[in-house]
Amino acid sequence: MKMNAGVITRKLAATKEFYTSVLDFGVTFENDFYLLLHTPGHTAEISFLLPGHASQQPFFQQPFQGKGMYLTIEVDDVDKLYAAIKKKKIPIKIALRDEPWGDRHFAIEDPNGVGIDIVKYSPVRPPYPFYYLVI
Image 1 (cartoon, rainbow, N blue to C red):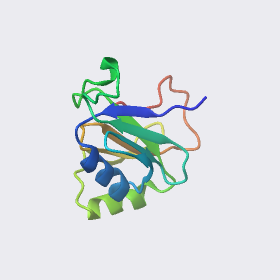
Image 2 (tube, rainbow, N blue to C red):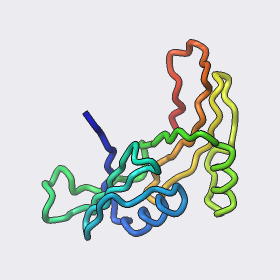
Image 3 (cartoon, rainbow, N blue to C red):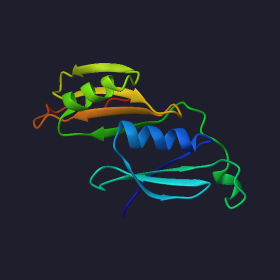
């Protein structure tokens, strides 16, 4: 089984620019109403769909309202990516920090309001029942 998250948005061009220039995602597929992006290394994908498109069923036509969604992106060198994103003058929503359970992370926001938590997981985590930060 594979999965990719999808966001229904009018901001396809801005979304493509953000993910490709800020996070180095690649374009897997694109047409006038759909954009499928992949992470560097092709380990995960995310899709974006234009709202109200005639080819889609009504269930997939309402645009995302910009609240209540986040993505977690695990990276090998969170400090290096943090410095690169700051250099690009992307607004930082949560500054780089270390958590008591060992993870090191920061957060940004995509053009649609999706929170993006960028994390380097600690190899040893205490036995907390919930490891992920919801932003």
